[in-house]
Structure formats: C-alpha cells, structure tokens
Length: 200
Image 1 (spheres, rainbow, N blue to C red):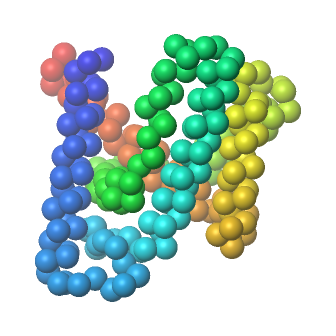
Image 2: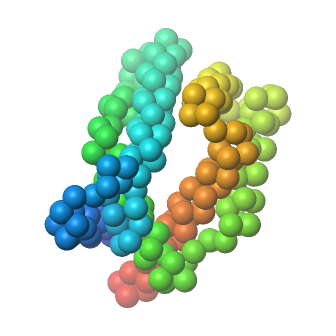
C-alpha cells in the first residue's frame, strides 16, 4: 500500500515536472502567448477563461469547506473536525494552473497507453453520481451529509448561473471532465499494477 502510494506520488510529480517543462518550452519558443491563452501543454491550449472558471470553482470549494468545518466542529468537537483542516487552505491560481497542466499531461499519457475511458462510460458514471446525490437529498440514502450536499448543489447552481452557461452545457463540461479524470485513474491503476507485478 505504502509502495503504491509512493509510486503514484512519483508519477504525479513527474507529470507536473513534464508539464512545467512543456509549458516553459512553449513560452520560450513562442516568446509571448496570445492574451486569452495562459499555457500550451503538448499542443493543448489552456485558455484564461478556463483557468478563471477553475479558480472560481476552487473559491466555491473553499467556502463550502469552511462552512462544513464549522458544522463539524459544533457537532463533534474540534478534534473530530481536525481532519478537514487541510482542505481549508485555498489554492492559488498558479496551483490550479499546475493541476490543469498535470491533468492534461496524464490524460495524454492515458490515451497513448490505451487507458482512455469512453464518453459513454463517463456519462454512465456521471448519471450514477447524480442518482446518488438525489438519493441523499431525498433521504433514500443516509450519509449524514444532506446539508452539505444541498449546500454544494446550491453553490454549483449559483456558479453555473453566474457563468452564463446552460445546465446542458455545464453537464457536458462535467462529463468531459469525468472522462479525463476516469482515464487518468485507469492509467495510474494500470501503472500501479505493472509496478506490483515487477516488484511483488
């Protein structure tokens, strides 16, 4: 378990390094990126509007984490809430950009290695998650997280409205994101399996 965590951390660190080198190369070779592009990774452009949106989502996550932390503190005491303290730090725009770069590099690797998850699989995962959320909200599924789930849904709906995008557009964006992250997960699991076979 410990060895596999070290392997995954190593792969992710390498991916970040590769991504930063790729971005550095693109900046050096193009001298100056267009105003609406913040980075180019393996030919993929990361647009300022995408970074702005990702950072706005991080701000939402941070605000939600603060409220959840206070609720847990009241309900279970400061010691129980300590586990959430790590999520109380808001990431910087640079950290968010680094994550976007890392995901693009890993996603490209996943596709190269034949680990890409299909759009239909991503859609099925999204629908399953949506059903689970509805089950929590309706009380069918008891997790003790109804308030937190309700608040998260309200925050996301408010965010979608502010961005001026339709629910359908938002759903399509989330499914594409699911496809990327599930492909990365599949790729990392495959790498872990290969490592375990070589080092039983």
